[in-house]
Length: 160
Image: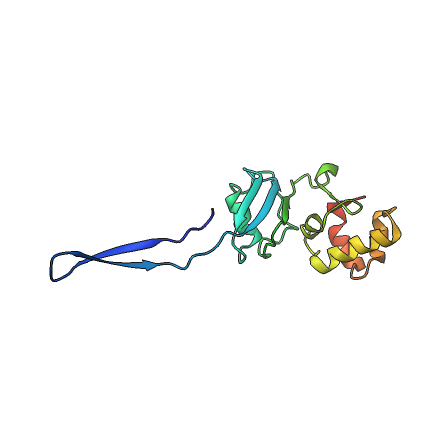
């Protein structure tokens, strides 16, 4: 668990000499969401976080960034979602293996691309379910909500 409730015990003597114990507790934050952190982090894996956590919190739990990490297109302030995949690309960001497949990527994988939220990720999946696999990266611009500007921003992080 990431965060646990902490109790502080303060002892006071009662008139008869017994210990009177008051327990003051910090708010308990549940670690009810699981995210997978992979790529250029020191300890890739699954991590438990609270529902108010941010991408940066998950990266910290994963031991922080490696020297090869490239966070230029990663929104560290984004709130996490349960089951989310956070991929930290390397400085050689063009490496094909590090790109997200628009033909096979899950909702969470698509959402890990900076600029693609749940609505756009669902639109990508709906489009490929209706029209079949994308035949080119540029075809992604046919998806509702994917503008030329957004396409230019994400094209280095996607593959067929």
